[in-house]
Image 1 (cartoon, each protein chain N blue to C red):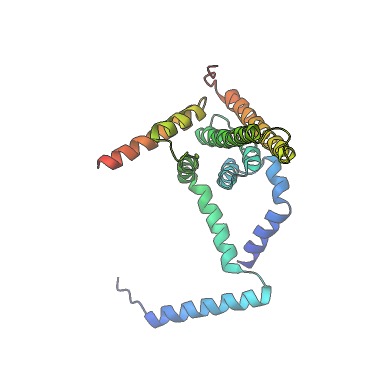
Image 2: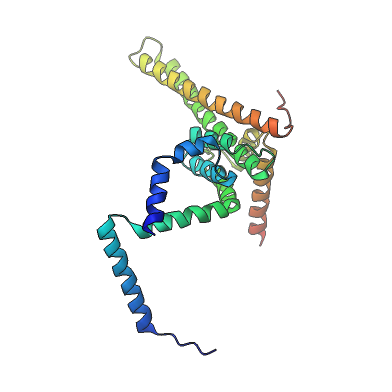
Length: 106
Length: 140
């Protein structure tokens, strides 16, 4: 099927859309695009919960305070102590460390 | 579009918190909000959201997020303990009859209070975790 793309048509559409958004914002006083993006973002976040859980796990490790004179073994020991009774989280930490080691090897 | 935006704002500001506290919203909504709160270090809200999402306690995602909040509670409690230790050492160095003693005592009290709150959150979440599945007992 032969499809023709029109650049002036696209630009006109974008301009009309922008004008419509500005006009609606002026009339209603509401930021329509921002509101819509917030709703889409929230929906997207709800779907991508597994990714967010992974990011939160990485953040947890990053936010463990490290003393200036402590080495990685102290930090690992600290993380180990604090993850007692938390089996799934401990597994996640182990997987993260393994992934880090693999990445360094590669 | 306008309707959706207005509806979303209206929901968040008015009936949103009430419906949230009833636990009627989708399970993932509460998990998502718990992660938001954890990111902002708003532990009170994170514990509330994890508790509200706890109808399905065998869910792996719920268990992991619950453990993340417990871990953060422990990290923050340890930081407060370090502050307490530091105050104690400084008080020993400056001696008891010092102008700073009152200030140190007040700071110590605030640190202790923060630590107690975090420990309460931790034990509340641990109880929920143990209730969902038999967790290993901590070796004393």
